[in-house]
Each structure stands twice: as structure tokens, then as C-alpha cells.
Length: 74
Image (tube, rainbow, N blue to C red; front, side, top):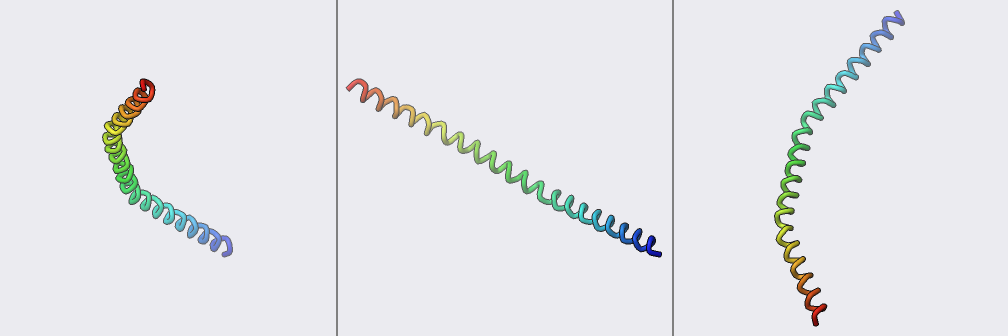
């Protein structure tokens, strides 16, 4: 009788563990597209920033060169 109860308890624990695992997998499946979307958005933002920074970097370089030449030759 005791053995039967222990077996039942063990079975219950295994079922509970499986249920938890299922919930975890479901949660991961729900969060995965959200994370991918966030990553895509971040990538898009980085590309945009890179496109915006290129001319700015060029302007800064030209200005630095200008000031360097101005102070060097004066």
C-alpha cells in the first residue's frame, strides 16, 4: 500500500514536471518572436545610425583638417 502511494506520488511529480516544462516551452515560443523583432529593430537602428554618421564623420574630419592646416600654416 505504501509502495503504491509512493509510486503515485512519483507519477504526480513527473506529471507536474512535464507540465512545467510544457509551460516553459510555451513561454519561450511566445517570447522568441518578440526577441527576434527587437533584434531586427536594433539592427535597423544601427544601420540607420551608420548612414547618418558617415556624413557627420566626414564633416568632422574635414573640419579637423581645416583647423590643423590653419594653425600649422599660420
